[in-house]
Image (cartoon, rainbow, N blue to C red; front, top):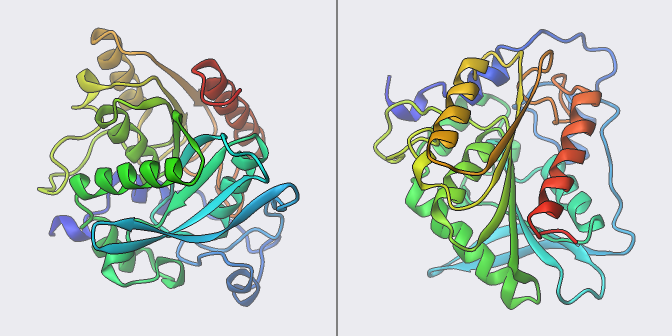
Length: 295
């Protein structure tokens, strides 16, 4: 099996969670119409929806080298110096859940932007219905390119009136891994929040160091939010990461929700756990406030 089709720990956590009954879920047609991906399984009828009242929100393009990367941006209307928070998506592309999270952050006062950094493959990930078909695209994304895409996103947000001196990043699933990677990369980052991000990678020449290996290089405080019932990321691994960061005198905090599976914040999926999701979101806000991202 090549690394391109490897089931990474985040994907294992996604696909090996408890089976869900179809009751309380949208039809596939309705889910697609509402802008959700189908690769993650059936979409819950009771998704969290955040309106654009008081916001400027919509699709945009960010120049990366000679190309243009699609992105979704939301910010408080009329606020010229809102802190910048980058949203690192799951493997499912820039679909409605990620856009909604971006609006939630804007409602908290942030210039929030979610870059669609898998765009170069020319595949609309939100339209792919089988996780296996996503792997060759998302596993082939080189970390070096990923990190430079985020640097370009930060520079763009600053050029659009965001306050890039108060920079945060939040990510979910594969995007949670990205938070750890970016915290080791960016000297400008003030704080990161990683929702169930992979900590140990399979061998992949495009991913030279896993988050665990990068523990000594962390440049910003990270809050790690993990599920005790995650079938892909064992609690022992989270504890190992915690120890590695402590040994290297890095600032980090972890919260493990004992009964929560992988994807417990994803309110469009059967993995959603409302209590854990709401508690984690509160902790994320507090973390960004503590380190001067949100005021």
